[in-house]
Length: 182
Image 1: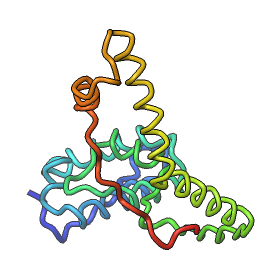
Image 2: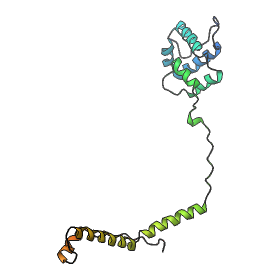
Image 3: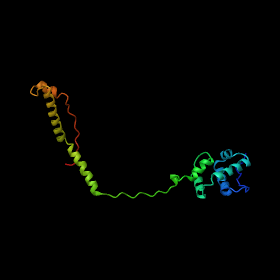
Image 4: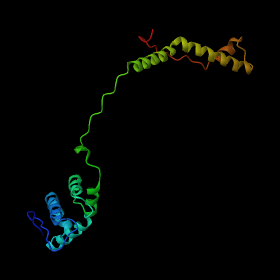
């Protein structure tokens, strides 16, 4: 089993698609970050580590140095990456939001005319909801009710009929808005 103080060095027996020093640096950084988990992931013998390094070199051959640096920066997991996960992290265009500098949005411009129009519209709605307007609407409804009952043979002249006709109409308590628009 490799000891934590062991460092990785690439052998120059074969030309890698990317520099051997880069792969050695990636492995060393991941070893320091993950310790025993990384050793388990790549194998415990030097031959296993060398074979894994060669495979990583092939798989990362399409990545630039900047992309590999980006992959090391953005990989944020409690487990070490495999070569496919690391290559995806290298080629991802998204950086962590915490590390991105955002410019503040400009303050919205104040439009006094639009605000005055909005307030005037609200006041008009409030004025329309006055008790006088609601009383007129109730009278109109009552007239509609009288017509409905008259069409069915009820007489508004008979007090009992009148009482029965309007039994279903119960006055609702009205809330009065004060200090608005008058």
